[in-house]
Image (cartoon, rainbow, N blue to C red; front, side, top):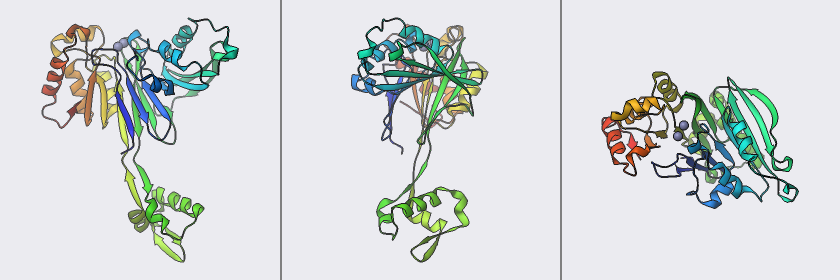
Length: 329
Ligand SMILES: [Zn+2]
Ligand SMILES: [Zn+2]
């Protein structure tokens, strides 16, 4: 399986947030940035991408602490979210005085903010005292907010009395070459690259590849020299009303996730309060996990009204999911 570490930053009854590290890519990712004091300082310093659901305080107050730890090292931090996240970041940055920045290494925040089918890109550069600079507007395609050669992050706009974003991190299955076996072939560096390209494209199924003086079929080479590295899908959903429309959108986004981090704020008996404050109950969280066919459910953002006792929520979730194979972690 793709090597991705991920875990909740805090206890279930504390501020929401997930830390995710994609090994061998140098990417250290946060989903939401509430209180992050519990996260190792050395990891916070490495965070280079932050996906924010919305800027209610419990999801955003950690920005100052992150900024504090990041000063002193030249770097770019990308932040993703929904309108008005860029404005909120601007005001956070303007809460301080930046008169000695000529002696500071350059730190730049690149913000990609979604609104009505478009992304608005902004830049905040310490050398310009973090003024808000609009860079460009791009059209949002297939609900992808970030993509590189390794993975992508998709989003859905959900209702929390304000629009909020839910996210899915997707690292796809990948065809890998068996390097030990390939070494034994009479191929040079460039030719190995060509073989990889040939095998990665399923359209070559009826074609042959020449090694030495012999032609080999696509199928025979694929079977002998490749294996599939399993991908992983990790989703993050929080602060949403349990409406039919929201649930449909969430299920569509998080379908077949290996890990679904999903809020489960209230017990079923408190469902009236849940809809009043636009949050999910255990029953709704369970319904999402079940309909979306996820493998593991990690519930969080438990209401403060239950104190530190997380058992009743776990108990209800397992009751609602008892006829499934879903693991509650
Ligand atoms: Zn909220
Ligand atoms: Zn919240």
